[in-house]
Length: 296
Image 1 (cartoon, rainbow, N blue to C red):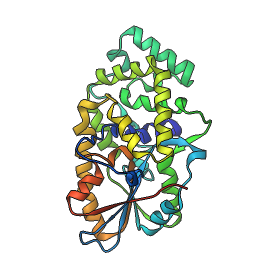
Image 2 (image 1 turned 180 degrees about the vertical axis):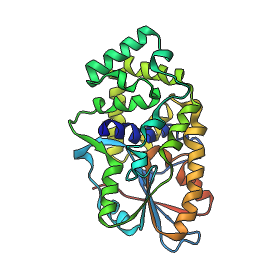
Image 3 (image 1 turned 90 degrees about the vertical axis):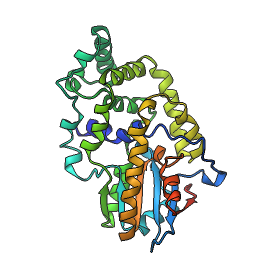
């Protein structure tokens, strides 16, 4: 159960990071990195931004020297959620449930429910009955390990958090599980279920796209990542809820925290770029954002 739940939690970010709009922001070749330094504007010491990919093959979790140095220089690790807090892991199950006694059987036709149940049984080796009352958007997270070519995958954030713990760094979450899951109560459960069924019906194509996106991430091709996620229509109507409002809230938190300590911020890569991305929002507030090469 723990492994499945962590998949659900770690993919909240990847679902919500898919709509970085970059039409009014230009990026240069040197910006092709997911590691950035934040300085200026009265800061005594720099902080750092790092864009994560929430689920990766374990053999691909290799960190560059610049990454290691940046994490070492920071005093506090800041993530979307503090996964070391049991309230955000073992206590999270209640927040993943649909409201008003909604269930998958109630929002899906019998035909679609049977197809979904069969997919869970045949492809995921799980019983759908265990997830009967969970928000459909979260269930997509269970599909992504099946799209990966490796046998062992894991959470990049957990790996980073383990490194931070070794040096006794403070760990802070920008949001709690109840705050993140509440975003998916705003979205129609029927629309979420529709997206779930579309993923099943187009699974092989989605698997290819997922692999392309993962390869772009591994090569630190930030510009190509932006191009790919701009064309993804999923949750597009919820951009303000899932991306813009959160980024503005996070930047306000960063300003307070950076005055007290040097931060290493690790959040979904889609949150970094675009007119409403963290990089641009911090620049508008007067901070200097410098790309740092992040290749081995």
